[in-house]
Length: 333
Image 1 (cartoon, rainbow, N blue to C red):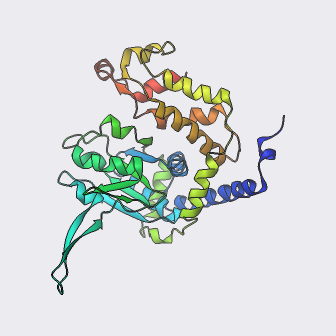
Image 2: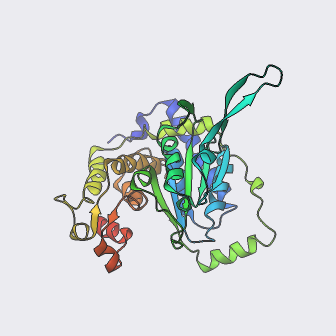
Image 3: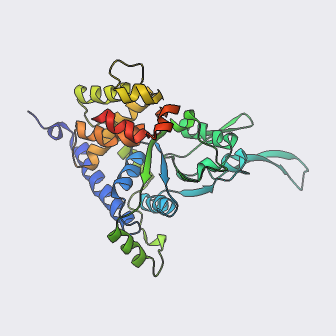
């Protein structure tokens, strides 16, 4: 059987080599700041490489913000941060029109003042602490990569990635993200505590402080856009595609292939957008692993991040203490 790598052009082969060298350099650069969490860093990088947005869930002090900042520095992209609070207004995110007056002529004209969303990597810190009206201000930007103000459309520079953080334990005073907005995040990655050796390394590393400026840019916007195009050229066999589709379809309680736990504990399953994300994400993961073809293992590795935030539990699941990760584990089994 012919190796798929033998079928690609010289230009593509050179781009694949550049992809591998660059992504390895990015992970090494982030690793100099963030201890451990290699799987999470891979998932964040995968989200960038497929042009998607990522939800980062973790307890306080698990380096969510530090990780996103470090990744933005390593990517060489413009970076801005919004601290979401209950009093944040949509215009504080997207920007607003300002009425300017010319002192000489006295004439007035509207001028659009861009908000912090006009960047390439946006850290939406504690996104669930702002009201739904402000959360909705992100919807158009995340889906269409543009902002509309007073009937005028303003395009965002590419690549544009929203990396949003949320705290899973402090629910008082928060506004859970609606399902429509959750579905626009390609992944929901979870940061857990480090092991003892890694935690000791963090303590030692922070004695003299961490300087993010020490993270050198390993790439640029044009290269990332080229990598995003490369990811979509990676071959994926029909059988692997069907495997991804079958996994997603099995999350729907009324599906014939749904396992008993899905029928018992889920109100709704994942949409076709989850299957699309699995397909594209598996391609990126294959390239990150040094392969130019996709296997079932690539799909399997992304099932958790892709489905975790797209499954709606019912009241019985809450009373029995069953989580979406429990359902996903049973589904894969």
